[in-house]
Length: 463
Image (cartoon, rainbow, N blue to C red; front, side):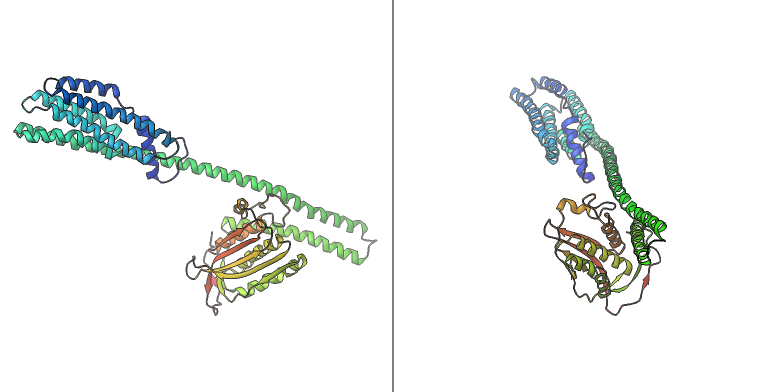
């Protein structure tokens, strides 16, 4: 019953649990109720008109039948995950009419001049009310409808009798009513506390399952990453060994120009390893929260010019038009992080654009707080990304296609995303296959154009 996955608030969880409790766990005592009804009819025989007794028996049987039909009708809906509120309302109404049936017995059989009838009616009602506390107190409206509809007619009859003895008995009945209500509230609190603990345990189980899935996913992606990068780190190492061996064995025979060319290749291989290691260390510092942030007034024009100078030749070599729009804004940011974020976004755009253009510009987004509405957009006309792969773009240790050759190995965008969070910003993606991609870096804090003094944070800012 409670083994299925639970979601939502505690109130929704309680409603579902109580509805299933009413349907599956409360077994209506048809045999005992039938016997008590027959005994009640026998007691009334000769004192109450036969037609009234027959009507009372018929109504009681009809209510039992309707209750059973209602349960059978609602079970398929509960299996489909809805109808819980209807179950609660149905049982509240059922409790009202069931209680009214026993209240009608008191009204029919009551005889103020015969103490025995008072004893029988009181015993009947006390037994039914006491037996209803445990199953019905889980939903207090159902309990109160049963309690009041069963006892109030009896109390009214005692009050109408008017004698001192009847008034005392009426007072005792009201006291019994309040004591049963108090007991029902205590039982209800126990039920709800049980539901709260079940709900918390279920959330813990789900959270553990989610954490386990996350850990397994991280383990798989890091395995993919290590499998890929181990090959890419071995390549420059082999190249260094080969070039070094070449120099050692052929140095006397080769000219100075050959040595210079070979040394240049060694430097390139070393730089490749150095770049890969630096990316790993940078991501490690970002994920551990140990990256220091120095905020200062940064002119976007200077950052755009620097990034353009880095990638202009690469874009031209691929035949891709690289255009930076004018940006007159000053922002409060860490200059190095801001520069790194834009480098990663522009590099990714050029890498995934075979022909066309990469555009870098700014725009204001009013859905952000005042003072943080500036966004930087990097838009390309490249191959685009399928919708199901977009959530994987910023996963560390993986390329979003799990080992297509890539210089970043899935680290570039992950680093950019982490750096943006350090700056209190975010990066969003809109993309379609064949229609290019737009990366939007939003939430930058703008400053007046004359702001230039640096601001040093006393402690590292963590995402």
